[in-house]
Image 1 (cartoon, one colour):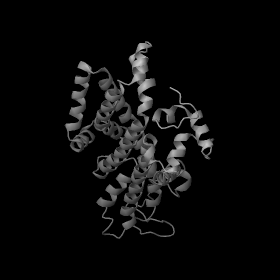
Image 2 (cartoon, rainbow, N blue to C red):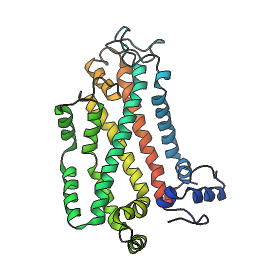
Image 3 (cartoon, rainbow, N blue to C red):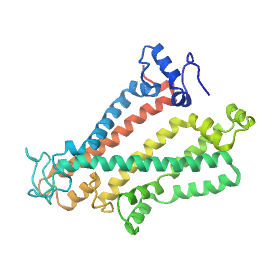
Image 4 (spheres, rainbow, N blue to C red):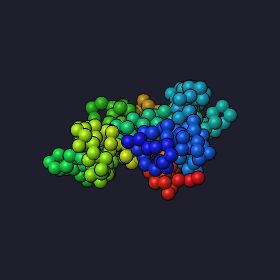
Length: 313
């Protein structure tokens, strides 16, 4: 469904699907018609703007890690347990690795886990939640059983068990574990939302037009749930980043992968505070907190996409 260019755009479907009308509306309001309407709404939100800049900074650091880091993350040719100095801004680890270089390369792991696990969790939640809410009946009962099962099972013990006893180790395993344990909450929310949308007039009209179930869900319902889907992805990515750091801190991560959680584990095991290497312990925790904060701040702007009352002029 296309929104006319002279009509205020207030629905996620119009924002996500009609960029031309959005651009005209933004230009008429004195904004830049060259920018997508959804981005203008996000950028106008002060908290979201700060979050976007923080996230963009982390992305640049991850992409340009070989150029930014003075050394490789596993180079252990320096004296161990050094404090911050001109040669090593954040000191060295007990094994003689440069802490600053590990911080830079660790951004790649956190962002990779967050994006991949967030996308996978969101896709599973959409497939299960939308199917259950739209078809109802026996299909809904069966899928709702698995959703409720995923909600009542203790997530942390399950994650620890899967990560500890899986025959194959590595970063891929961590992503799979986080995905398997993180889809149920999003599926329940999407199921509840589609139940309210399946009776709308445009869905009924699509049924009378002969559209199939998959087409109705993809072209009529999903666009009107776009802001909810984006919020779900942000939450899944945020949880995945925290889960990876937590598992790595407990020693269940990939020992061959440099991540902020692995750094925290090694700093704790190496007695960083007792040897005066405060930067080795504080730095990974600080950047992890900043990355989590960036996702949280962006959520304020995402909420404004679906609620015009939250938008800032």
